[in-house]
Every structure is written in C-alpha cells, then in structure tokens.
Image (tube, rainbow, N blue to C red; front, side, top):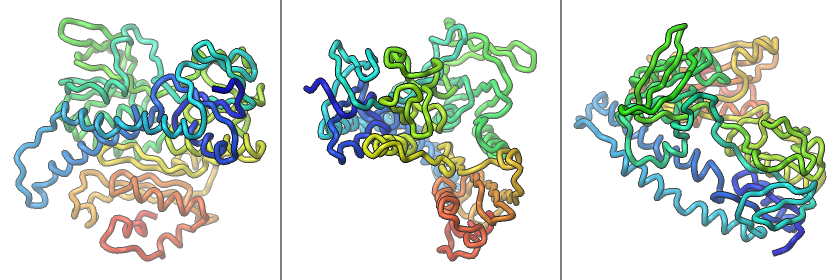
Length: 448
C-alpha cells in the first residue's frame, strides 16, 4: 500500500462513504481506516437492525387491533430469540459488502487511527500521510457517571441479546429508550423509563411528546421524568436501580438496565493535539464548511459533528459536502433548516422544522393547527390507537414552519411537509392540492 494519499478517511460509515463517493469520482487517492465493521453504526448496530425489531412490533400492534376489524386471533407471542436471529440474518452481509465498496474506492487499513502530526495518521504502527484527512468516526453511547454504570447495556446489547428480559429499565428518555420500549413492551417485558429532565425527547415539540407519552403508557410502560438515578447495584435477584423522585429515594429491580441517554461524538483516542486540531474534549471545533478551525487539512462529518443531528442521511449529506469542499475548495455549507426525522415507536412520531416553542422564541407570528385525529374516519378505519398532529404556518408568508405528526402514517407524510418547506410551496397550495382518496395523505388538507 501507499504511504501518502490525497484523502485519508477515518471511519467506514455513512459519512466516510459520502466523502469517498465524491473524492473517488474526482480521481483522488483514498485511504479508509476502520477499527470495527464497515458500514458503521446505522446498518450494523443502529437504524437498520432496529427497524427489524420495530417491524415485529408493528406486526404485534396490527394483531392487537385485529378484533376491531372482525378478525379473530388467538393471543400472539413474540419469539424474541427468533426475532434477534432474523435481525442478524438480514444485516449479516453488510460489513463485507461495505468493505468491498471501500476497496473499490481506495486502500483499506484495519485498526484504530491516531494522529501523529498535522497530516500524518498512524494505524497499527504504520504511518500514512494525507493531504486532507476526514474524521468520520461516528458516535458512541453517552457515558453516565452513575455508580454501577458498568452493569448497563447499550443499544448494541439490545440488538444482540437473544433472551427477552422480564423487566427492563431505561436510564434516559431519548430516542433509543422510546423506540426499544415499544418493542420490549409488545414482546411482553415490563418496561420503565427514568428521565432526568422534565420531558422525554427534550428537543421535540412538547405537545407531540405528551401525545406519544400517553400512547407509550397505554402499552404499560412506566414513565418517570425529573428523576435522578443514583446507583445501579447487582444483586442476587437482578439489577437494583436506585433513584430519587420528588425528593424520595426509590428503587426498581430489573433483569436489564439500558443506557438510553443518547450518544456523543466518538473522538477519544484520536490524539487530536498531535495534529493541532482544536477541541474541548467533547467536540472538534469546525467552521461552517466542516473544516477544522485550527488545521485546514482536517475535516469532520457525520455523528462526530456535535452541532448537527445524529441521523444517517445527515451523515451522508455532510460527507458529500466535505468531499466537494476537498475537491473544489471550501464553497459548500450544510443547510440543516429542513430535516425530516422520526422516532420509530409504534406509531411513529415524525417531525420537521420548528417546534412551537422555537417559533415563539424567534418571535414569529405563527398559526398553529393542532389536530386530535382519534375521531376521524380515516383513523377509525384503520383502528389507530394514536393519531395527532401540530402544523405551524407563518401568517405573513403562508409558509409551513414546522410539522409534527404522531401516527397517521406521519413517517411518510412528513416528507410532503418537508418538500413544501424546502421548495417554498405555500400552506394554501398544500390545502388546495388534489390527493388520492381514501388515503392518509388526503387528510393533509385538514392538518393545516
């Protein structure tokens, strides 16, 4: 292999492949460095395998509602071991396939990378030089400073544990906790979520989260917010979780305790100081072109960027921007103003744009339409257990500023709102458009 490359990419996930797609097309020599499995978190330990479990939860939900449609069903049982086996079968080919793609685009180095100079990286004792170096190392579970934290598992453990636990406690009420709690609960586990902040999913619209919390509690999940977990202790009966709730010390016993507190940039061990890369220990300092503010040869993309949402499409998007800026000069900047996303509970909570609180904080004059769709004909037809939305429209421009949908196929409908926001389609135009009927999309007119 070579000792010098046009581009060194540290990390073989979506961000790294986004960079390589542009750099390879421009004829740049590329070195990939990957310490774990190619493809990164999303296809191997995140969104892709998670959706296999969520699909099973969807099936259980449909069976639960079947009697409403006149369908007689005996009590179903989810075989957790078979579900985990199915998940592993579906994703097993990914690392090899992604490594094969990396090898088509450049040279592959397996191992942990660390900087030894402004343009030099060492991997397994070999030093390679890069004209440009991209940090695309992804994220890792947020460490929690709780005595006994070593007894917790992460989302990796949930996706690989072939035994369904009887009781599960999530420390933190973020996306991971919400999504897996819906799967665990439908599989028959008793689930508790302990969140330190007053609200689950604290970055999302408070009314939307309240609607989701109500549906989550309907499943039997116990939700406690504003609590402080003080210790996790291993006992003969399982794991004891000690916490303080409203000034009172309480405890829970569970077979599994899951770190559901989110993820942080995975930049430990890169030896950033040796490269003169400015950082504060948690985040790398970058400019608006995704370039290090102190070393112009170093770029950052994907979950290693702390100022953008940790979403797979954003990682690819940022990687492509970095690739462009390496090839053509720093002329592109990411635009995060319209990013549709979803929390894949059952049903999903989907969102794009501003929450109502954010719009009010900006001083915008907004029209807010909140719809409890539980009584709508489309909702009743499909026996939805939760159907709710909130849409924000700028009164002066008639532009959609934000949309939040629980259920009602919102994880698909949210893209219509995103398209309207990105391309300047007015709320009036959305209302006056023709939609196939009967569909959930036909209800768009009534959501605005």
